[in-house]
Image (cartoon, rainbow, N blue to C red; front, top):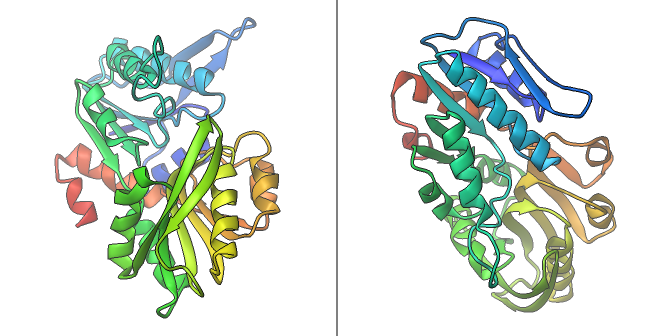
Length: 310
């Protein structure tokens, strides 16, 4: 078993390698003067089971290209099996034709990863579950629900807790955590006029005097969460917090969250946190390294990954 880290989130790869008690495979992933990606695997990987860790977060195109070129380098080095470990799968929000003459970019990226040489994909909390069907190779989609539910139980006590889905599409994800922590579920009915902007229309459920925990797979501009927290507090909630798997946090998202009613937003290290994110007083981070490491171990051993979440 070999672990190769690209440049997107090397600290996460190092943490996973430490848990598995394996060194990272020596590799040089660099740029030419015109920013072309060049990859050189500096160890023998012939006949090996190789895992490439690379979230395709900002800059999404550069990090995706790094992953593709690394996969090709490993395939041409005769690796026996190559698993693309993509903790955050970029382009996942483009999973359908949202308007006439628009692409389904998630399918395109799936094709690119397969053609580059991946034999399977290990990812986490895909924006839409059907993206697994875009691949013609096996896909293991890990979920953060057990990690979040344990943390929620440690931080919140009593009958005042209520889990909140920020939109109708996230109900299944939120209900899974509400079931694990044995509490009620509320749903926010929102309207999204354009990408990155949303308006809360209604709140389904009783949130008066409750500690509200909003659950979602990713936070980008932060507008949805800030609007949701405002609406919950105005409706009489005692507090509003959030648990989000992928902290994309682009543009002015961090400052927007810092000045919002959100008491605490918990994200994972699926995306490497910027210095601004680390300084934000109401954003904290949980690591997914143990979960990734155990899933990788089970894939290598040909044992069950789904039983991780039983």
